Amino acid sequence: MIVRIMGEGQLRIADEHFPELNRLDDELGEAVESGDDERFRAALVRLLDQVRQVGTPVGDDELVDSDLVLPYAEAHIDQVRELLTEEGLIPLEPPTR
Image (tube, rainbow, N blue to C red; front, side, top):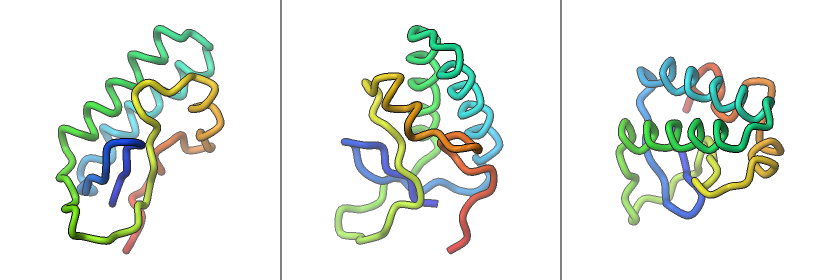
């Protein structure tokens, strides 16, 4: 799966990382629902840090569509709320290519 973090670039994420990313995504969704900005900010940073840690940067010379776009770390809680779907920001199953 190709993930873009707004303002940072694209990362290639292996399917094996989905369970942990979904767990962090669930925490983020709960934080957004609670309206607690401090909790939201911490959850967003954890999710983005994990994506950066497990992802492999897509080369600047590669032209690939992103399967998923994540907000930048400074995004406002209301901006992220608009991006959430029933599955959160990250789909429950990796997209097939």
